[in-house]
Image 1: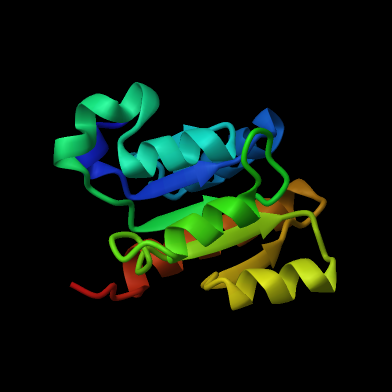
Image 2 (image 1 turned 120 degrees about the horizontal axis):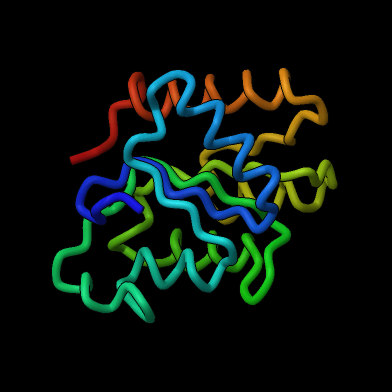
Amino acid sequence: MSPLNTVEILLAEDSQHDAELAIRALKKHNMANNLVHVKDGEEALDFIFGRGKYEANKGNLHYPKVILLDIQMPKVNGIEVLQQLKGNPLTHNIPVVILTSSKEHPDVRLCYELGANSYIVKPVNFEGFAEAIRNLGFYWLLLNQPPD
């Protein structure tokens, strides 16, 4: 796991297979050096807010440049994570990209209403998934200019 003060990408994904594909695609293009992978929404919130196993870092929190967030996760789902992130003045500016298999229009609409910066449906084949992840990393890590 990367030191918390250098994290660029927080990947919140409960599927080990999808997480490995995303990490492999980002590594291939040298964009996974500062990545933390969490396996559920509760761990994502703990990481961001310095709780639970991340409590020791609470006084020295550094937020990621982008959060890649799955919707269907155990403990706390991605929509609840998004709601908490965008509802908090300390974290509302962190770009959140919903990366999910759900094409349901209510999910898309709700995520944007809650402040998601992007909503991407995971391609089913590896090449499409790898390309989508590469483009996400390139845009959010290299092109996007975040607020101060």
